[in-house]
Image 1 (cartoon, rainbow, N blue to C red):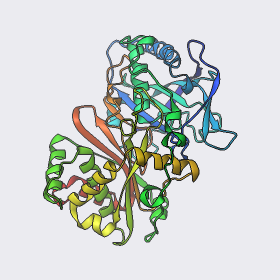
Image 2 (cartoon, rainbow, N blue to C red):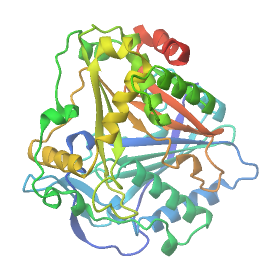
Image 3 (cartoon, rainbow, N blue to C red):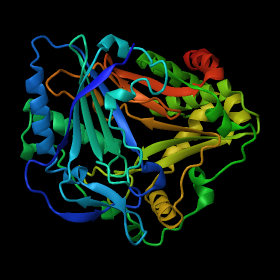
Image 4 (tube, one colour):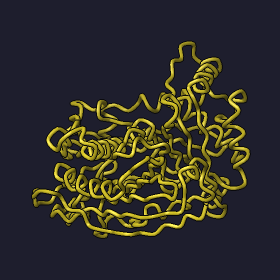
Length: 438
């Protein structure tokens, strides 16, 4: 796969109608240090007979202009507030970036893992390294492939929206492009309301580092951090269909230390991935390990956040244990840790996090940590811009962060993507695929 990509056009897309001119404050969760980056989707579309590429391009650009009217902050620019208390977005209709490109790649080449983490980088050629340096918070690149297929890559400033919000945006954008909805018919209608996740809303919530291990640091007993720098990371991808997920659930229940053990597919799969990763890395028994994962709080705070809230509405759940216990005590034990960590997230927990990130700029330490995020429930597999639904969904670049992805061919399946150090990739894949050894 040569990955030759030639950018034909790069233009600034501004809203189709006048939008409010003002500065909007971002919430405490939007302003966190670890969301100050660009997250990037790559959607792959198979060839469509008789497709008018010029018409598709013009329609996508026109509909991007239209969707940027209700989502006008995505055409603004994010910066630090002068009072030092977080971030804000300057809304002056500055615009998003749209690129059209050509590549000699084919759709089938995206069915396999990339050879290296950055192999598909050029499919989103405009990469934003620093989201606070005046860069556009939204970048879209449509690349035509040599077999008539296409890729759509989209980069979002994470300070402005989370995964759920970005999924709602992309589906609204696509519905405009295919005529399924008009500009005034978007569902859900985007809602700003960032004040709902600021410290004053939660009253006397106190930050408590001991009860929030996701923000604590642990001793590095094995050169954990340096290993991820010194060794090349290898992208991996393994799909779990409904049958395999049910096998994991049965195994977790059988090996659980409690009698009643209902668990979700997310809980058992994330536990299985975490254990497989830890076993493959062959860490010291007394190394403390964490699984840190995002928990949607839209319905977990009181009152609930309004439908259409597209800002960062998640906090981090954190399961923590010693390497020895994680690897030896079985899948049931690990799944219980994930389940308990997820169920701890309530209104009080969110208030403590909001206070922590506001007062101490708390962030996640990397030692002994696997970070996992779920893209399989964002609706990315349904984003149709007139070329059909995507046949592949994933990140532009693979990373050490684990991403759970949808499988276009199986609605109940989940694809596990993560890059692991070269020296342990074979062991990791062995443990991940061998559910009977869990």
